Length: 346
Image 1 (cartoon, rainbow, N blue to C red):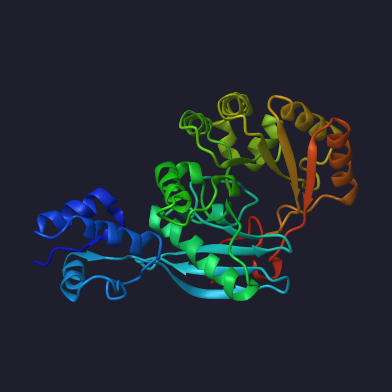
Image 2: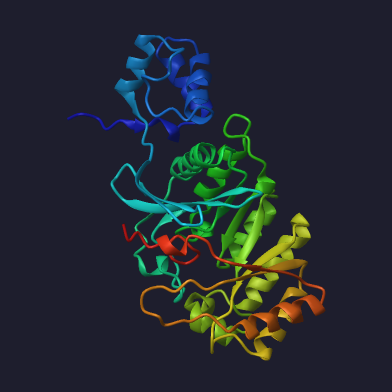
């Protein structure tokens, strides 16, 4: 029976060095291979041109590189690009390139499907099939960086973990991917240009704070009233606002990084003065800013965008209370690439 080849990117640099030493070769070959895998994003051993033919054949005999491929690419009228990304086992996730005049942002996925049950999000209706491996997250960033250079003439500037899945439910792999993305031996991106967006898993937020991560934190909040939040995000019963607030206070005390609240306002759900006042109160527990996000409808039409008057109420009240607020207009809606719309329709 043939032994299944191991994905070489699951090995550390030290394990690669040990492999070569065990083969009677020089350990430094492991450094060379590691550089090809992470700095140069090699998709094959054949392309590792500074290795001898015998070395490449040895690698091919023992290992495989399970890189992703873009199964389908769609371009929006506003320049946004959505990729349907095929994984080595045939499963699909989606990632998005969001261009503006000042920056190019990669919106990447962390799970196939999602672990949570937010009623307004198309991804939550997909069964969570598995977590993405660190290299599969990393590969999405590499692909979008190449697209940014090709179509917009500039490298990728920012990364947000706001695609499919709850990043903190794939904690270890997400942090390993960010480690590779920010490492000088990887893509060398600044952690300050990376934002991990969570629906709010208090235990994992505290764990991140304890590990003194240097990237930014965003919380998909949408209501600061427990009964309202539970009605739209049922997992709030398990992780109520009191626990979330305590975790965020802990995060700020440890990291001194302010928190971003992502917040959609829906008609007849969270569009009253009471809702606004609750958000203002919640924002006071730790330094924060609020992104008011335009709602992007999904197929059944259960939710609808609040009126401009309601958005203005939020904006003015937050500003009057000294809280930084931005209204985000969604991009890529015509190709279902906007926030909450990723559902593998392709």
